[in-house]
Image (cartoon, rainbow, N blue to C red):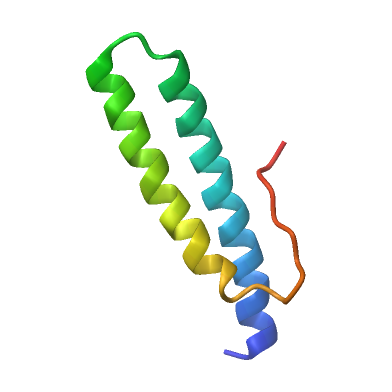
Length: 68
């Protein structure tokens, strides 16, 4: 796999991960059940770690935000 291919994959995957992170954060903030809120917070933290990992392989200077 070339570094260009890895960069393309990284951008796609990072966007997916930050989108999932944002979704779980929103769900956590609107959840009334403390147990469910904690679960969504935990999931959002995991997704952010995945996002952070993929960001290491993106092209320098590339900003990646969630899907709209």
